Length: 389
Image (cartoon, rainbow, N blue to C red; front, side, top):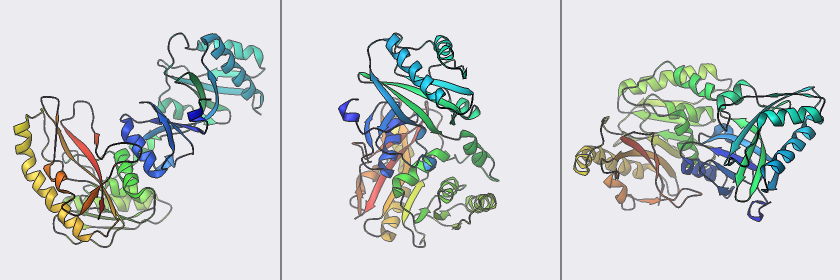
C-alpha cells in the first residue's frame, strides 16, 4: 500500500461539492483525512456518517494492489469474491460493483467476472446491473447492498494502486424526503434550506460536541429539525410571525414521530436586536436577499447587497454582544454570481474582526469561505465560521 495511506481504513464518497464535505469530516474528526480526490477521501477512522450531510457513502477498505493490467485486476477481484462467497453461510450472494477512476484498459467485464466466479464457487452470484460506472444511492438502498450476503464492492483507482472497499453505509435519501416533504409546513417562496446543508452547518459549528444550538433566522425550522434529530436542544427565532409558527408546528410534528423527547424554544424575534436565551453554538442560514433570475453586474450586485449588508452588519453586532469568548457560529450568507463570472460577497464580512470575531479556516482546507451553490444558481450561500474573541 502507498506509504502515505498505510493507515487508511475507510473511503468516504463525497457530495457534489467535495471541499465542503472534507471540511465537515475535518470538523468531526480532525486529522482523519489522509488524501482526497474530487470523488472520495481516504480516512483513518469511521466518521459519524449518520449525522453528516456531505458524505454520501462510506466503504471499508479490504484490499489493495499495484496496477499492472486489467487481467491481473480481474484475477484479484475474482479471487476475493470467491473467498468472500465461500465464507458465507447463505448460498446466494447479491453483488454490486462501482468503479472510480478506472480507465478503459482496467475496466472490468462484469458478465465475464460473473461467469468466472460461478465456475469457482458452488454459490449463486446475482450481479446488480448498472448503466454507469457507479451504482446510485437508490440502487444500493433498494437492493440492500450493506448486508453480509448483499454487498457493493467499490474499485477505486488512486495514484498507482487499485483499492477494494465494501460499502458499509449509504445516505438514506428516502428519509431526507420524508422529513423534508412530510412536515406540515413548507414555503418554497422564501426558499428552503436543504436538510443536508443544515446538517453540515451544525457539524461545522459544533464539531459534534453536545449543547444548545441557536438559529436566529429559523424560517420553517429545517436546521432546528436536523439539530433536534441529532439530539441537540434548539432555540429558534424569526422576525416573521408566520415563520416562527411554522417552525413550532414542524418541531411539534417531529416530536410526535421521535421515540425520545426533543427540547425546543421558538418565538418571534428580530436577529438584529433580540435577546436570545443562553446558547452554546450558532448555526444558521441568514436572509439571502430577494430572488434573482439573472446574473447581476457588479454595480447591480452592489445595489442589491446594500440593505442586505446593513442587516447582516447589525446581526453580527447583536450576536457578538451575546456570545462568550471561544463560542463559534457557522453562518451561511448570500453570495451573488456575477455576469462576468466573478462573485460578489457581503462587505460586512471584512469587518468581522472589528466586530469582535476571529474568522476561522475550515478543517482540512486552506479556506475561510466555502461556496454552496447549484448549477445556474444566481444567489449562492457563502459559508463562514467565526469565533468570539
